[in-house]
Length: 215
Image 1 (cartoon, rainbow, N blue to C red):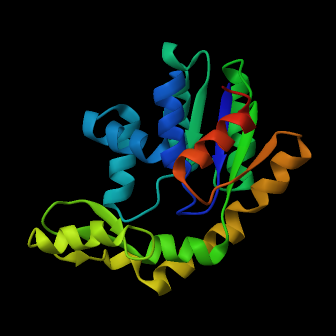
Image 2 (cartoon, rainbow, N blue to C red):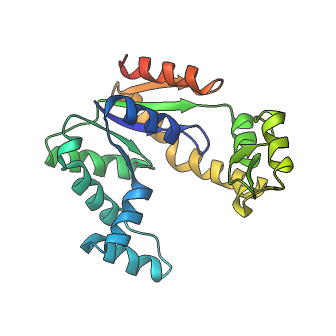
């Protein structure tokens, strides 16, 4: 089972991919994690990426695809994987198909984590970290007792600088402009499955597993 995760920031892609990885031993392949690990390990591609980032430039698709190809060629990815964070646009989707063809593989399913825009805004702008415990909470969705526990522990609920409404709206607009066309891309190839990604996280996970045909 080779899965591509689609969805806006805050839709829960990473959370559900991690659970599927734990339950079904399908590696979650996050491009962000691959990049950080390659830079830390000083691999040839990692060194190229670091030089690019040090110059204040974006890491090229060629470098990212090289890292993905190396990761998917490892033994634990032979029976499947969950790709989280790539592709982000149509050109990357075509490039990914070419890389997978070289490996004798293909995408089986693209899963869209579908969440209403206003809920996404609350999920992202409402995030707070307890300065005392480090626990990540949400002023809109966390239980009042959890929020109060942080204060009782002597902590404060701190918002990340990039979780302000202006920045979040921009991130969502970029998603709509660049990534949303992938929905049509995979739908035309009869690969798209849509999961209602609101409500209890366990209910979302059950819908997610059903969509990809796993028990």
